[in-house]
Image 1 (cartoon, one colour):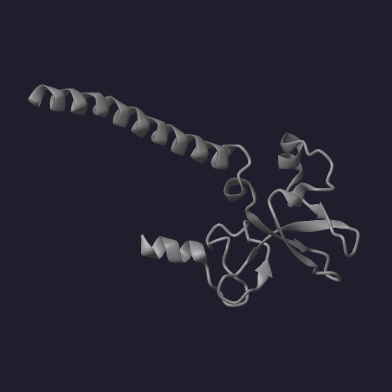
Image 2 (image 1 turned 45 degrees about the vertical axis):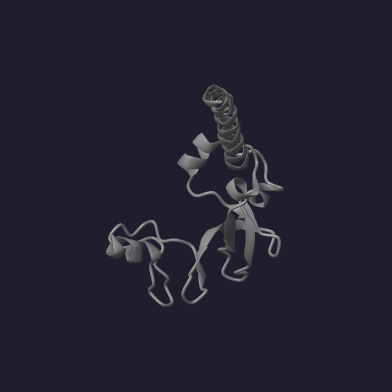
Length: 139
């Protein structure tokens, strides 16, 4: 009787190990697929675009995939030399839309100030809040 019990437990252990390895492989495959192969969580990040034309000021909230729709192919090497990327504004028809930031505190939409190196680029011009500054203080 003890030998039969030993035989039953030794047969069951390899099956449990194979099932555990299969579950880990399935979880890794799902993670890879959602992160690197077009899963909604990895690809579609929210993006805010603002028209810098003084007469327009149009604001469009979209995601990172839809942002590139309707634009010509961009050569990133020449774009780095020519300055920030601009997009065609659907309201005024000028190529003056830029990526912007929406203040989490007051909701103001503004283009980050990357020229002033003494201040945080995401500082809101209206309420003076900066998420990067808060993160720095917290750390």
